[in-house]
Amino acid sequence: MVRSSSVLAILSSLAILATTTSGAVTTSLENCLQKISGLEVVVAGDSSWTKAKQAFDLRFTYTPKAVVYPSTDSQVQAAVKCAAASSIPIAPRCGGHSYEGYSLGGADGFLIIDVTKMQTVTVDQSTETAWIGAGSKLGPAYLSLWQSGNYTIPGGTCPSVGVSGNALGGGYGLLGRKHSVLADNVVALKFVNAKGELLQVDASTNPDLFWALRGGGLGSYGVVTSFQFKIYQISSPVTAFEYSFPASSYKKVMQGLAAWSPSAPEEVTVELNWGASSFDLTGIYLGPKSNIPSVMNKWFSIIKPSSSDVKEMSMIQAILKFTYMGTTDIQALSLTTGPGPADSRYYAGKSLLFDKATFSDESIEIIHKWLPKYKQGYIIIDVWGGAVHNQPSTGPNAFVHRSQQYGIEFVSEWDKDKCGDCLTWLSGFFNEMLTQYKKEYTVVKAYQNYIDRTLPNWSSAYYADAFPRLVSIKKDIDPNNIFRNPQSIPVSL
Ligand SMILES: Cc1cc2nc3c(=O)[nH]c(=O)nc-3n(C[C@H](O)[C@H](O)[C@H](O)COP(=O)(O)OP(=O)(O)OC[C@H]3O[C@@H](n4cnc5c(N)ncnc54)[C@H](O)[C@@H]3O)c2cc1C
Ligand SMILES: *[C@@H]1O[C@H](CO)[C@@H](O)[C@H](O)[C@H]1NC(C)=O
Ligand SMILES: *[C@@H]1O[C@H](CO)[C@@H](O)[C@H](O)[C@H]1NC(C)=O
Image (tube, rainbow, N blue to C red; front, side, top):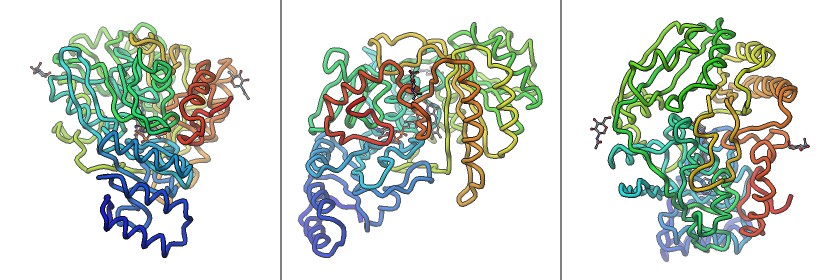
């Protein structure tokens, strides 16, 4: 049963109070939530409970106290006050894709504030900005922006990833080298703090919070209810490409990458997918197909791809292509499957960021040694650089990663009950890479949107010098640490 406020609902929760064996704290939270006008509240025993407490990553089976689906800012405010009054910790949730299940709190006993009913997209062409509800997922947001005049934002490629998590932890995708991460394109936010107050957050109002949320905002400070983003109109066709190399040519491919990436134009963004027996290069170029030979020459003069698929298409078709949904109907981006995480799977990922343009022979050999050991394992090498290296026009923020040339994501996937050595493979591989990395770099850097509970010294790897300031802002805004997860910003160093 999906509950909303009504005399009946209050009566039925009183009935639960009389018969339940769960603690009084739960029921007082429930009572408080049930009184919020129009709020959808889901608790244990309701028919939608199993779906409500499911994460994208099916490994996680945390049990919240309740999941609520507000559709207005004031419902978010009221729900926060209910949890704060009962000292129940809160995890906001958008796309549910946190690598560690942190939008369920990363533990039992949280109030989950799922913002996915808040998806309104409003474009202002005169300022080239758009307000996007914090519950929007990337696919539907891309579609709406496109339909409002060929606009887009530079976010991630997976359509079911939430705009919120993507923007608050960075957000890197097809336009990354031209327009940087999504966090850098946030102009303003609407935000509910731990007291349940609704705040405007921008460069001149609550500037500390504005700095912190862009890069350090993953579940630590409060609930963002909407974002204002800078938007980009892309009406000329772009060139989308996919190339393959024989996996046995990995040394040459990596040599080509090193020769190419330092001087590659910002108009091109690529990613390399290296698996047990495949090595693919995908990306887009903001320009005509006829320029591709010169754009890729420094790489392809070292190794020629064994197959290629290079096509001009509209920006929205390119976005759709790299969702791998296997359709050319852009309506697919609307993901009309309703609220809640879609396309769930068993998945684990880790990351490292590399400043140097050339990977050492040692690290290339470690990758080559480990990939064939696990069939559903692979790495994704993202070529960062370009605009990511510049501070955004709205001023510096807590996204500190400004000098890396590459990010590597290490991924393991598996089928239900068939993990086998899926996680030991991943940690064995990663640990050997990390040991080698530490020989080459004095500090470890990793990407907070691939959040990793077992990463040593994660606060430094994700936030570097920004961490002490993030902590002091946290202490001001949420001293009781109501908004938390195992890797949220703590109230003291
Ligand atoms: C299949 C897959 C593909 C991906 N592809 C990319 C990619 O191309 N580029 C890229 O940069 N990243 C990518 N990611 C990583 C992704 O950006 C992060 O996992 C991101 O944090 C997920 O956001 P979400 O809203 O879906 O997740 P959630 O699990 O809902 O949220 C993530 C974190 O943010 C917090 N949060 C959520 N909503 C709010 C809110 N409104 N206010 C405050 N805090 C909030 C949550 O509490 C949680 O701690 C991918 C992840 C997956 C699983
Ligand atoms: C939008 O983009 C498409 C394809 O790139 C183009 O054909 C069309 O003219 C553009 N529309 C506007 C309003 O610019
Ligand atoms: C964590 O990283 C910082 C910055 O690189 C370093 O100074 C510190 O010694 C590290 N701490 C541990 C425990 O490794």
